[in-house]
Amino acid sequence: MTETSPLIKIRDVHFSRGSKLIFDGVNMDIQRGKVTAIMGPSGTGKTTLLKLIGGQLRPSAGFIEVDGENVHRLRRKQLYLLRKKMGMLFQSGALLTDITVFDNVAFPLREHTNLPESMIRHLVLMKLHAVGLRGARDLMPAELSGGMARRVALARAIALDPMMIMYDEPFTGQDPISMGVLVQLIRLLNDALGLSSIVVSHDVKETCAIADYVYLVSGGKIVEHGSPAQLAESDSEWSQQFMQGMADGPVPFHYAAKEYAKDLLGLEA
Amino acid sequence: MLSYFQRLGATSLGMFERLGRGSVFFVNILLSIPSVIVRPRLLIAQIYFVGVLSFSLIVISGLFVGMVIALQGFYTLSDFGAEGMLGVMVAASLIRELGPVVSALLFAGRAGSALTAEIGLMKATEQLSGMEMMAVDPVARIMAPRFLAGLISMPILATLFSAVGVMGGYFIGVGLLGIDEGGYWSQMQAKIDFSQDVVNGLIKSVIFGWVVTWIAVFEGHDAIPTSEGVSRATTRTVVHSAFAILLLDFILTALMFGDI
Ligand SMILES: Nc1ncnc2c1ncn2[C@@H]1O[C@H](COP(=O)(O)OP(=O)(O)O)[C@@H](O)[C@H]1O
Ligand SMILES: [Mg+2]
Image 1 (tube, rainbow over the protein chains, first blue to last red):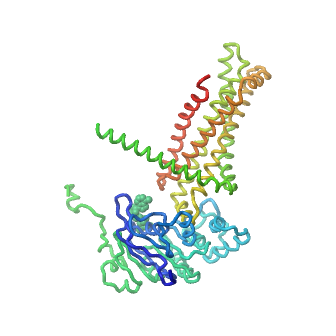
Image 2: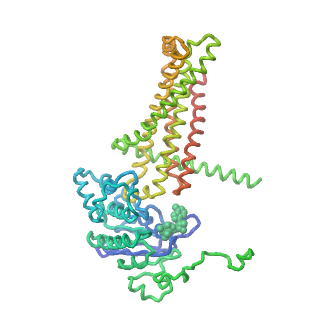
C-alpha cells in the first residue's frame, strides 16, 4: 500500500440484476490524486459500479479494493469507517429534504464527531464557502436549483475530509453556467484538497476537459481506456463512436429487436 | 387448473418471503434501539410528529364515539330499567375494545400512512442511500426512532381516546338524558376492574401500536422507489394495518376475556 499503488483496484468484477448481466469481468485501477472518468451509454451500469465500490452492492465474482481493503470482506463497522473516507455525490444530490442547507452539510459532522456547535458552524461555513454557497445556508433543499443542490451535496461530501469523491453524472441536466461551475469545482477541489475523484458521466466534452484518465464502459466490459488525448486519437471504433457521439456503431442505435420488415408485417421472426 | 395452483403457490411464497424480510428488518430495528435511547432528541421529535399531531383527531373521534355509545346504550338499558349502568357500559366498551381498536385504526390512517410515504420518498430520492454512503445507518437514524415513537404513542392515544369517550358519554348520559351523575361514576368505579379491563386494554394498544408502526416503517423501507411504488406501499400500510388490528383484536379478546 505505497503512495503509488492505485487507490481503487477493481479485478474481474461480475454483477447481475436478476437474470440481466450488468458486469462481465471489469478491471480498473483508479490512481491517487487523479480525476478518473468512467463514461458509457445510459443503462450500462455506471451508477451500479459506484455502488459496488461503496459496498452498497456485492459483486457475484471478482473483488474491489479501496485503499488496500477488500470492500466486500469488511465487517459492517469497518465498512462504515471506510465510507467516512469516501464521499459520494448522487445524481439527484440526495440532500435531506426536511432540514436546511446548513444542517445538511453539518449532518455528517454531527453524526460522526462530538465537535462543539461553534466548531461545526465554522467547518460548515468553510465547506459552503468552497462551493460558493455560504449565503445559501438558511435555504431549504426545495428552494435550490439543480446545480446549487449538487454543490451543497458536494459541500456535504467533503465535510469529513474524505480521501476520494465519486460523482454520479454531475453534469446531467445542468444549464451551461452551472455546468461550467461544476466542472471547475471538481478539478479545483481535487487538486486543492488532494483528493482522488471518480466522475461518472456521458458528457464527453466536459468530462474530458478535467479527466486525467478515462475508462469507456459498454456491454458489461471496459472497451477502451487511456488519457483523453489517447482516446481522441485512438482509431478503435468504440472511442470513435463515443467521443464523437455517433448514433450507430459498436453500441447499436436500435435496442435488440426483430428484423424491421418482418416486425412491421407482424410476422414471427 | 394447474395455473391456478401455480399462482396460489407463487402468491403464498411471495407472502412468506415478505414476512421473512419484514422479520429480519424488525430484528435490525430492535438491535438499533439502544442507539436511539442514547440520543433521545430524535425520538422526541418523532413522538411529536407521530403522536402529538394525532391528538386532535383522537380527541374529536373519542368524544363522538363516547357520545354515540351513550345514546345507543341508554335506549337499550332503559328497556330493562338499568340506565344506572350506562357509565359502566360506556367505560367498558371504550376501555376494552373501542379505545384500542378505533384509535389504532385512526393512527394507521393518520400516522402510519405518513410514515410509509415519508420513508418511501426518502428512498426514492436516494436520501437513504446517501445516508448509507455517509456511513450513517438509516435503520438506526430513521426507522428505529419512528418505530419507538409509534410504540410509545399508541397506548397514550388509546388512553386519551377512552378518557375523552367516557366524558362524551357523561355529557350525553348525565347532561342530555338526565341520568344520575353520582351513579354514572360510582357504578363505573365499582365495575371496571383495573387488571381485567384497564391493563388488558393497554396491552392491546401496545400490540396494535407495535404492529401498525412495524408495517408502516417496513412498507416505506421496502417500497419500490418510484412514485407509483410509494403510493402502493402507503395503501398497503393502511389496508394491512386494518386487517392486522381487527384480526389481533379478535385473538386477544378471545385470550383475555374468553373465559368470563
Ligand atoms: N434497483 C434495481 N433493480 C433492478 N435493476 C436495476 C436497478 N437499478 C438499476 N437497474 C438496472 O441496471 C442497469 C444499470 O443501471 P445503472 O447502473 O443505473 O446504469 P447507468 O448509471 O449507467 O445509467 C440498468 O439496465 C437498470 O435497468
Ligand atoms: Mg446512473
